[in-house]
Image 1 (cartoon, rainbow over the protein chains, first blue to last red):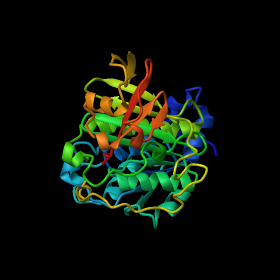
Image 2: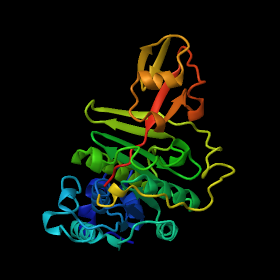
Image 3: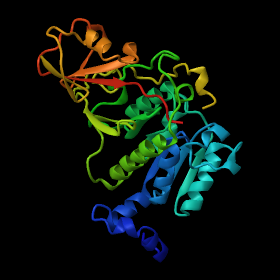
Image 4: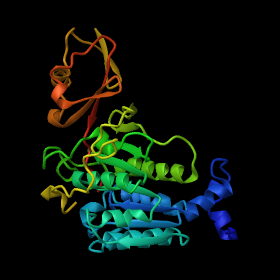
Length: 269
Length: 68
């Protein structure tokens, strides 16, 4: 596949980088990334991946755009209120870069649909806002041997880690099982600064890009934490011995996906 | 003795357990925190019996569920 003149110009800042070059840009154009959740994390991740020329981007979300989303979900605009989030996200990405094929899935991910959904993608981004979904994505990615980026944000804080099969701990190695409903506050209850999604969601896009071009060190085996008030980034090393994990360990006890009960307050996002 | 908590060096009394450190550090969700000592996870049912030693490095890993 040869670049068009327009593509050479569009991706010139990538092509000039020795870590990307024409070869890396072609990898990006051939790559498929699935973003689960078109919200605070998914919005910036989707926009940067579309701008970067990731050839196929899947976006899954069952919700509609709400006015209270616009403080942080920059892929949607005021005119989109009431529209399906995946439709609004698809339009923004396609306007940004016509090279990108966007697959919109207006669904909540469940144990029934997730394995099939992630199967055709190279890298998955978890932009969901609740623990049942985060554990479901982790377990499905472990079972389907798919790399993914986990992230969470709340108030002025965020966290991020990357799972690559066979290269370190999964999310469940760190957090054994979802906390009970309402034991840990959600963004809706506790609040979140909009720019936090921008910081952490952009880092998720960066992990996907590095994975696709095969350059640099991924956040495998570490949890990155960000405290915006202290302006402090910390990379916490995680234990490398994951053999006892219930899902990615040598003798897994979780061999089928689990639909945990979702906190009621998460529905409206 | 001197230990490191979340990257910060702290002078603490000898015999300090992980459980007591969780209280002292005012961990927001003590029931649902993951703790590592010297890059090894400590099972939550061992917080009480895990006595910290001079030079230990402790990390608290918190659930962060937001994203939308």
